[in-house]
Length: 340
Ligand code: SF4
Image 1 (cartoon, rainbow, N blue to C red):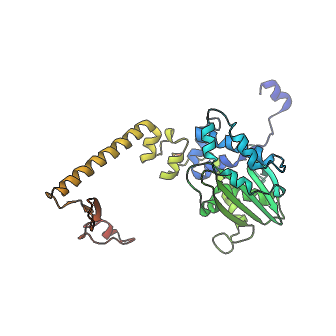
Image 2 (tube, protein in one colour):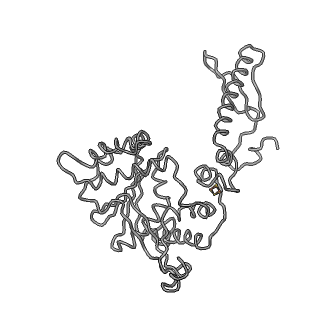
Image 3 (cartoon, helix red, strand yellow):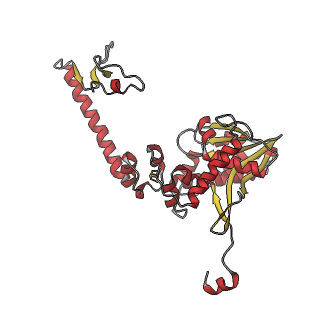
């Protein structure tokens, strides 16, 4: 805005919209939230996911006729996906047709359904609005069900659905938007595998302990993420699994171990992995030959012994804990550390 605009129009009082992805990044690791640029070009898996979601949304909006259902429409349209990534989109959506076939159009409340709530806070004079888009929302009786399509590799399980920030954030807003609805269900559809992960939430049901309702816990989790964003928190909470999935790992000073190596130079990491695998194969052959020749009965490490597997006619190596090592028990550090 130039100075004349400022003079006549005054400072902007546009609200600030915080969407689920932004807050989820802060909730996972504030450093990632602070340093992720929404304008960063998306990698191929994200582009494949977006293209698949676009076709799913079109299919669900498709008006059913006796010879054409959303599932049929999807089959037709997926072949017309963006030509540069069409094979990947088809692969990512390989099990979706069956899932779409099970949705009754009369239950649909909205597709790509944008919801928002105003938690009553301001940031730098601007009202903060929490918002998210839900892939598909259905309603029957007094239950709302959210369907979400996931094209990632790796299946999701019920426990993932129950604990996901996405489930809690979306449910919290839905409870505001539909004050007479207490039950919200989530179904995450894994479109590569045809499996689902399910969670059911109830506004006043306890969450983990008596006296703490789900409503209260989910709102508090959301507001903690908002607080991290408002304070521009830059704390890092590295964990191997988080860092391996992190978009800013390549420029994060806190990333450690394998996640740091692969982020810094994926090609070098792949080369090292293949070389290590080849070397392991070579070492195994040497050990096998040595034991086979009878010159050595076993290769003894400090924790494990490599010897011929018994009983079998075929020769193969087995790895066994050393018989004279003390048995390690959970929480027994002395036993864990052997002779220390
Ligand atoms: S790499 Fe790890 S520590 Fe760094 S921002 Fe990502 S999740 Fe956080």
